[in-house]
Amino acid sequence: MSFQQGLSGLNAAAKNLDVIGNNVSNSGTVGFKQSQAQFADVYANSLTGAGGSNIGIGTKVALVAQQFTQGNITATNNPLDMAINGGGFFRMDNNGETTYQRNGQFQLDRMGFIVNPTGAKLTGYTANASGVLSTGAPSPLSVNTADLAPQVTSGVNAVLNLDSRGGVPVPAFDMTDPTSFNNSTAVSVYDSLGNSHTLQTYYVKTAASTWDVYASQDGGAAFSPVPNTITFDSSGVLTGGSPMTIPPQALTTGAAALGFPIDFTGTTQFGSAFSVNTLNQDGFTSGRLAGFNIGADGMVMGRYTNGQSAVLGQVVLANFANPNGLQPLGNNMWAETSTSGNPLVGIPSSGSLGVLQSSAVEDSNVDLTAELVNMITAQRVYQANAQTIKAQDAVLQTLVNLR
Image (cartoon, rainbow, N blue to C red; front, side, top):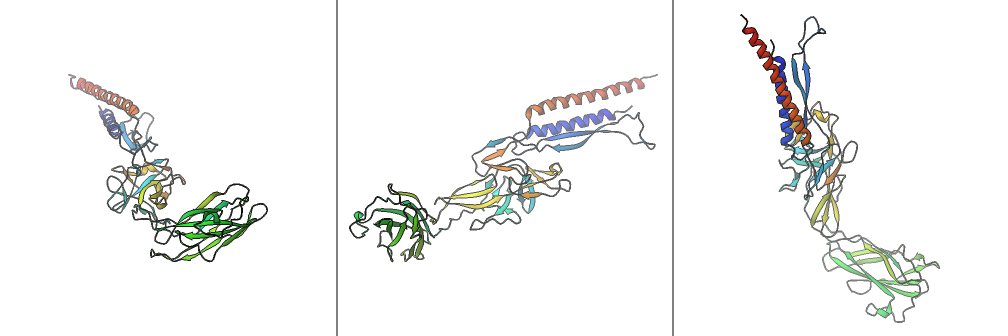
């Protein structure tokens, strides 16, 4: 008599229940991938070769395979939380060891590095002070909380419409006398230390299609040499006088002398009211980090109190030819093996890599309904195998009782 088949069936059903139980227990684990027990039949080898009437000797667990299907994505309130929608894994630096995970629950440690709950650091492309990414080997990402350095104004772009119907002012130009100029505008400009200065420009019509432009800074005297003359053709299109050069002006703030051109390209002279269509400049004051966000391409963008933004880094993802060949390490991590193949590292949304969704996490892909049904099935299989052992025992007892 042989109890091998029933015993192997009991063992297989018990291991299947173990796999199902592990899936159920991790149904709330972010980034968890459910496993599936796969079985194979077992036959005894014969010295003379297998015949057509061989009876199998049971079953065995051939593989416990993880199912890397997409889990549902749930929004969170943490801007550092990230969900991968598609293929790929986060690449982590775990005390010098490279590991991979799908759990996108991250936070900042005391050094400013982006870490997971166990302290492993998220890797990617780091950025220098100018926001230029270093796209070589990925390294641990950190959020630089230093102030954003100010940028001196290097130019002003002014697109206006000067009213062709306006008359020529009678009094000589005087900044304090509104009747001595037709229109004026103001814009804030910044010196090398980030101090704000008010640039005022005045527009005085001197003849048909001819205007003089005066400028002053912080209410001081008009810049010299003055004025700058801009002209228009019969269609109201600018024909000369752009750009206007503001000579370097000494400052009392300790900053470098401030000078720049004013570009009037696009300015017109039509028979309609004076209007300012564009009036901007490229300088800004210093700013403190107010927050940051992570884009679908993994770009980490910092937002500063001066209204500017800057690149702080870029998250990279890794994928494998055979994800089922990865070795589970616990703590939601996997390690590459010879079976998984080498990691294919790239930015999100490139190649076979998915896109990132910030302020969100990927739920476990365990289907509780299916697992509960599988549990019932595995239990019935266990009971059926126990019955085969019971039947074998009854037959053996009958033989022992023969007289």
